[in-house]
Length: 143
Image (cartoon, rainbow, N blue to C red; front, side, top):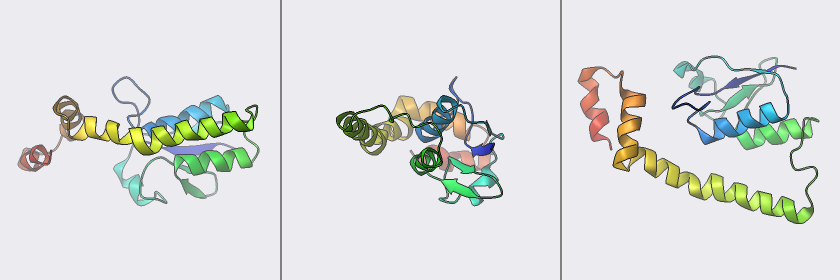
């Protein structure tokens, strides 16, 4: 089975600027699962089951969103389980760190990109550099 991974794509020398896209793609590589990743197309947001990236087409048009749900589905379907060899205590620690990163420290990343001046200057140019001049003022004032 080859699935299709919809993500943003390479930026700043990494495979994706989204930590959740990176998480899912890293899992797919670790699990040695075949996948296609078409170039980013903003119109794909309409197709995304949860209205955000990443999401996958598992085949036959079966779409699934949310990196954690996708990984759980693949593990439950018999794909590689990175936690299989962990003890119950280690699994609990793993879950605690995942929650810390994804639900708490994630907001530090968001702040540093969208509100903190050094990060915003990079984001502004990267994401909005091609915005027509007429709209640039709105984008620049949104910070």
